[in-house]
Image 1 (cartoon, chains in turn purple, yellow):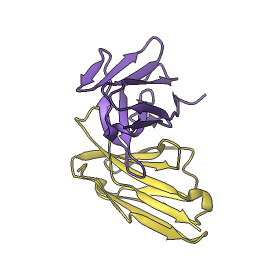
Image 2 (cartoon, each protein chain N blue to C red):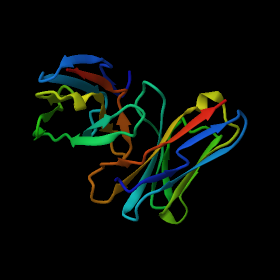
Image 3 (cartoon, chains in turn purple, cyan):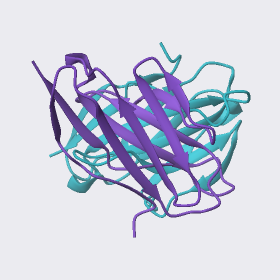
Image 4 (cartoon, chains in turn brown, blue):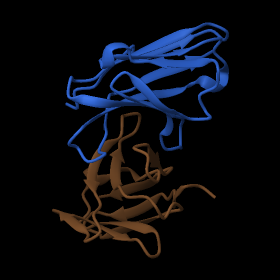
Amino acid sequence: RKEVEQDPGPFNVPEGATVAFNCTYSNSASQSFFWYRQDCRKEPKLLMSVYSSGNEDGRFTAQLNRASQYISLLIRDSKLSDSATYLCVVNADSSYKLIFGSGTRLLVRP
Amino acid sequence: DTGVSQDPRHKITKRGQNVTFRCDPISEHNRLYWYRQTLGQGPEFLTYFQNEAQLEKSRLLSDRFSAERPKGSFSTLEIQRTEQGDSAMYLCAGETAISGNTIYFGEGSWLTVV
């Protein structure tokens, strides 16, 4: 079983739609959680950290469910510029090492 | 700008040759990471340094791979006797002591082994 699992997609949605991605992780001792965004052939860039209480940044909302070991990302009012791959990231137990999922691809169409 | 520079950005090499990648983080990056990414996959952890100490290495880092961070500043990743399976993007990332385990990537070094 992979340490971090994501649906690869692609999710193909119209502009203005709301879309949600989930990610599951295997290590119950993980303490740090993030979503990164990656454009084609570019480096991953931090989108947002994920806190136990959940957090929101504009159109983006991230939630953490420790009991079920999953993380979610909700994007409201999708823009064409949101088209990218979204990477779920979890630290490996007590290590600083971050484990990346394979990513979920989002395509926003006009 | 994440403050992490990588060089070269692209490298094409023949199988069996050695290649070296360099990463220059900002001075505040006490932790430095190397990842490898192939098409359709997320970045895979290779190794990380805290200052000049290499604290963890992945099983992916075979004996053909070696990384250094002399003086806790820049870092190098060397691949000896390259194989076609080494073709990937090699990503360096920095982390500050106060960034809460958040890492910031450089633009990556693309390696093609022919």
